[in-house]
Length: 412
Image (cartoon, rainbow, N blue to C red; front, side, top):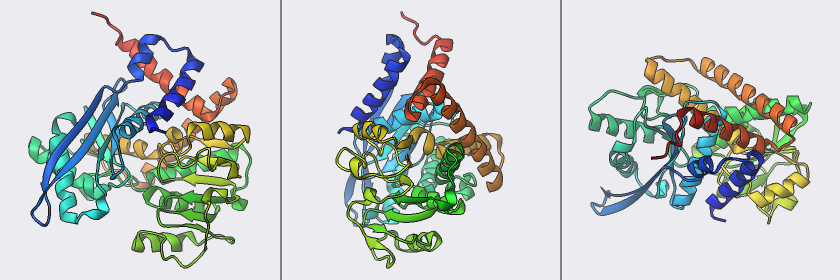
């Protein structure tokens, strides 16, 4: 399925629950800007390589566009458009002063040297210069990018603009104006959702098991914080293999190994398993890419809850089957929103010339995640909806209230 088809199915379901007016519906179901660029870089062998870049600015009714830059060789425009739509809802749900956007660079970063990646990053920033600004569009890292990429991009923008403004990009290194706590924010937020879910459902996490798909920044940080809550990890999967640990795995040892080797390929503990999501456990945490739980594998799933660390990991048809099996889903726009919340904190610190401690950042994030989750849960119970439907309705309602106040429907 084209990823934007999934977006449309989810949106249309929420729309029916709300009886949205046609004018507002037309505004929300289309992105404002779809930008595609091609630019040359000089490779290490002195040959010219043309790089393809994307930026979708979906909606800015609530404020400047906000969203990461994904670096992957299998991205496509409708994927970026989908991610930008989800960012729009995510920022609205968390009551941030941002709209939604998303960017992409269509390469496999592992195929390039550090010097070539720097040229690619700076080239993207230079070519997108007119579209970015701290009150216009604020990019951040995503899959395949990191704080180093953001440092190169902000430097390129500053030189082109002849400014010292550092609030144009978030997810920077602390040394270049980034925020403490930003690196672990998404994983910390995911673990907080699990904690709140367990309190609501009166589940003892010390006796609970989980499996996690994807062990990059989001997956490894999620595992770290779930470990602090007392959970036992019995399965880990990355792009090289899927492993089952009957007695659980030493997460700190696995995190250390992964940082050194960048994959599970030669990890000596655990046993290989073919159908990763068939492992019986309490919690499944998909932290890789979209559409990994589908009609083809959903019937083998046996857990209490799925926490969407990735964007769109459960496709629409699979979700309907999970509903019949009474398996809960903590949806992406809630579960993995910790990253954009701390990006907002970074943006605030940059604008105010302040520097917050990691303890302060994570305490504020913890309170924010618990407040929003509790609000969504109470609304879900009141309206007898799923948690995803509830999150969509609350997000869309906030955008609509702002649109009505601004009177964006003025007709010439």
